[in-house]
Image (cartoon, rainbow, N blue to C red; front, side, top):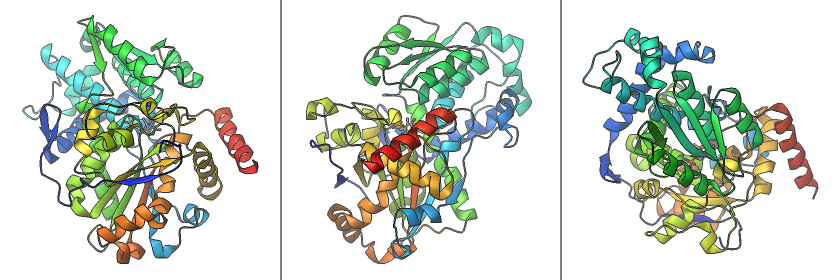
Length: 438
Ligand SMILES: *Cc1c(COP(=O)(O)O)cnc(C)c1O
């Protein structure tokens, strides 16, 4: 890891049967919290369909397809005897264009419900209320907007979280503010500014942008800061994806049981998104789902945190420089909340070079015609790492899974890409070609 070479680490603390409730900071979380997040999305769906034309077809539900990827499987030379490759296409999630649509939007909606309740607005939701969809539509009305306009919703981000929170917050009438690090892509900043979001640039890395945003918001009682390093609402928003995926797997006739293991490969930045999803999947599928996080070789913050076990080390402490084209994953220090939740649940973490990210990005384009951003390609090394590395074989043997591989499902979570401008995307392909020729 210190040499910035690809590695697979498997988690000795993983429990086959996860506890029903897990400690997360000062709280405990369980299946009921995952369902509550899903129900919150459902309550807001009619309002979201009204605010975002692109959500009309789905009735306001922000979800992505589950699809087989046989051509990509061939491109990766993953023979059928090792299982079948599938994708969870979050690169096409509407509104935010990335997995951040799940957690980021969930937290803005939760804050919106809380304000509505405090101000006696209609549609103040929650399990103890029976407000109908029409009440929620009134949250787009003048009375609600007048109140929301007094509040500032702020976030620190390398880009995608800012897009998700900024777009949703400003659509609901909040003043939205995104603190961005120097590695944030200019097109992400421009897109936010066009939507009326205030973009504050910070010279340092992601962590410094978050700290600056947190500090500014703390001084203002009308500011709400979405804290990517500490937020339980974000994590639970991501977790709701597991319920939807369960239905999609069932509809596709994909079994998940002792004979049909499910391996999930999740690109990891600070860890909130993959931890939320892994938490949800482990609650639903128990021992039979195996979640692996994928990180850039020079930004393996989650691996560093899991290895340390305690404290809050950064990748800089290991002589790594946190430089990667995978801007969504360019994070020097992991979320301790995510690491805490993952300790008994996670199967492992592997790392990927930028050259491999670009190769897989181009292969996915050529094989399946799908457009993703570099961060979203991190999962595609997973099947190879698991099935062919010594650490991966040892994991399979230890869990008695080697014989089940022909019936296994390998699910690569493609986490972003929809909003990448075409000229930017052509630049990715050109870079992939240059790297392949080198
Ligand atoms: C943010 C992001 C991730 C990882 O999410 P974290 O919560 O930061 O771990 C993965 N892929 C993309 C495209 C992202 O934007």
